[in-house]
Length: 556
Image (cartoon, rainbow, N blue to C red; front, side):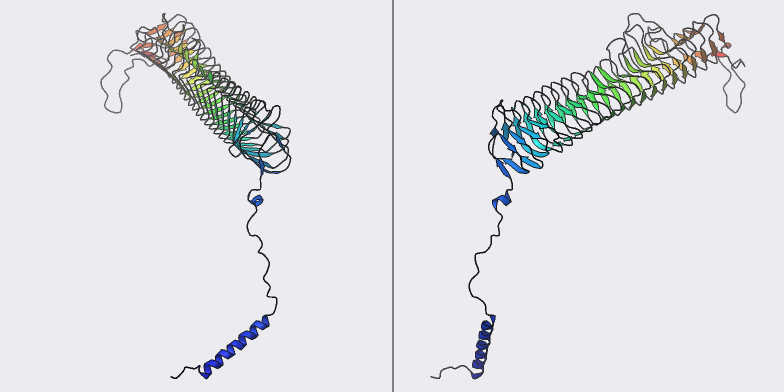
């Protein structure tokens, strides 16, 4: 049998490869000893958790760093739980509770340092849940609850931030913060004292103060509130100083006032309901789109206050009560009273301005009371009523100017009706009325006193029902009654005083069209009630007035 053998050429190729490879290996040189153990590639536990655990109380932190609780901890008598005396400390309560056991002092005390504290509960400490001393500033407190502490719930220094924290049933303030703090989404409920006590220039948003024994929010000057609610507090809902700003805030069912502030407050779209006074400010405040409902008094303000598109609804006494130089635009008072018989829907001091305001269905002695020198334009008093011996739609002061205003359907529940019960306008010395309307009032439509000019006005159906009323009643002297229309009143134009001038008026359908006393001056009174001339179809016709006297008064 023939055996196989490698061909000469293949053998030469293999030999050449082996020699070449051996030469390469020998050429590398160096030690063939294996290297040592590999270096570690994983992080240490300290690197993964660079924080210091706290497992017992009391403890004082004097080193910057991060700390955390390992579980619920209980303090000891006469000692603070955790004292922070170093800057840049972060303390994570980890969802656990620091309890004072009703014998420890403060749960956390921060001495002259900034700190970040979060995620846990501070309960039953005899001083405060959290307390700061000295120059502790720029603190950050988040998701912390302070419950049942004898003292303040959470106290922070200036420039601090408090987010989503809660204070309940502490014996003084729930939150007490330094100047320029920011407080967001916090709740203060059932404190013995106020819910929030904040220093100047602080900002609060989305916070709730409910059922506290003092006020809801107490603030220094320059603070700002947005979408905050004060409900059911024994004191004032929002008690503030100068230059505060509030937006979309509500004060509901507080035992005293809903909102109070000193000068230069700004209120936007705020609501006060079921408080003693809804809004009460000192001077120069501005309120826009605010509502006072079911309070004792709606709006009670000092001098130079401006209100725009505000509403007073169903308050038990006054709707609006403002000092001198007030400015009201687009405001309404409805369903207020009865309160005292001297109450009113709108009361403004001397030199005030009212534009497009309305007093409707109030049980008050007057829809509008305006001090001397005020101006009322396009305002309306409708269906107001009172049991007072005198009551009016408008009761204005001397030298007032009233333009385009209307008094309609004002009435009286007094047992003895007269021309001043349920009257339309009560107008004193030196006032001017232009293009106003008085219709369907129980008493006089317009009751003017002396030196009044009334022109271009309409009085229709006054002295209605069992009432007693003239369309225009000049009670005393020296008035100018010109170019008015009186229709279907008990008396049309009734002049009691002397020296009055009555010119260019028209009267129709009144029980007595003109009732003018002696020693007055008037244009001819021309009766044109008989059938007039023929119908007109064309561009001209002869006069049927039967008088060319430019001062004539007409009965028609």
